[in-house]
Length: 264
Length: 328
Image: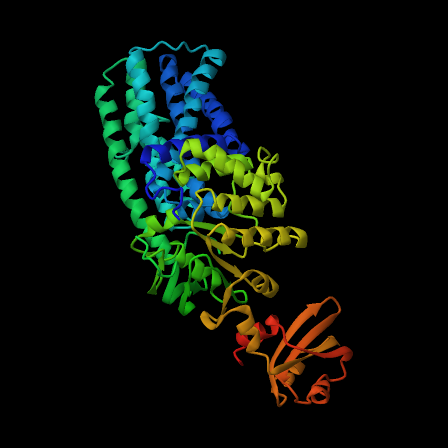
């Protein structure tokens, strides 16, 4: 007698199933919906007034795009940080590990879902800007903009994967996710241009995908050459994926040795 | 590949140590030996019970067998596959169900939960619908599957858990205290469901601390206490361990710990257990058949009010108490 299950479930199937399942699950969480829906509107409003009072009306779209990306980062951070903690809390983390699907593909699907939902914040911010502040959405390179957006989502999702992998082992690591929201907004230039920050802050931003993602998005919307930033975003995504999957394999094994998968 | 004729589940001298720490400023590291050399073998189609009190090491043992914990030492095999080296292959061949409220996605429907796990176990899309339908029917959730799990009763959740654990039709099923917290009628239905698993040719490992459950369901039982297997055999064989004993049941109102300690020291007493029942405590005292110890027992209560006193034949529960107290 053999099981109907498969010893090795194909990666694409696990990623797709988890992407869909997490999207469905997240949209039923009122906290997550609040963070994703309302927060970007609040931040974009603040950013609009900041830029307006700074006497740089031409930069309003610049600010709107930054605020949108801040929303994707918040959603990724809370989504992927909360993910493992929530799975552990509700007792499903063990069931996921006990399934024959590779845990890393489960996490890839779930973290991509959190940043995909964060896409709303870009759309919401731009719409809010158009309705409330009269900012027209005129794109310099529409085709590249359409490429830059998903590339950035993947860039942020895979960065979320690296973070989430550490949360498998360390039960309290998601407290870190609260600390990482503002610093990442700052050093990656989402909130204010990096040139306004002290010199040591810029190199920190170089290894973070939002830095390049926002450049690619801003250049493709406002003019300039977005291609180098786009390539950097894709390159970093690949690097994060490699690091994240290595971390997950290692941390999963450590968690089975140290018994940190369950609360009890 | 499974070896023909070999046990389906095999634990050989399994040990597991946990490291914990206490204190916040001066942290002290402690090592707790949860499982200390557990060995047993389960044959194909058998319903094997792991019976023991809370904290005896049942869940730790089961978690090592289902690849969630790596043993500190010793080996375990499921269908001939090593649980550490061949973890992924083991996972596809086993189902795991645990008791209690947790382990389900509350905000989603029962059907969403089942579909998701069917994907994780690689059940083919064309098979999923049929399999989920069959399982909903089997666990009696047909018609309720589209409701959110957060509205399910304990019994319904537990039935959903069982359906989830069987989605990929695994030949080996691990049930960790599946009836815990379920009302008596629900628990009885659950037991019928568990019994039907071996009829389907599955091999089942069940952990429980309910004696009657183990007695009613299991072909063989291993009693586990303080991380060790203290006895193994059929329910009948375990009962025969106390065949030469008699049990005196004493109802007492407000007995203290010192009196119970004194009871244990009375000559001829082999085990004492206490069951709290509202106002009174029911003491069960085991001694050799023919030993006239009742008057000596009744003298130990410091004037506490004594109710009914009955002598009776031992049951599986008495065998269990005798085993976990280490006096058998």
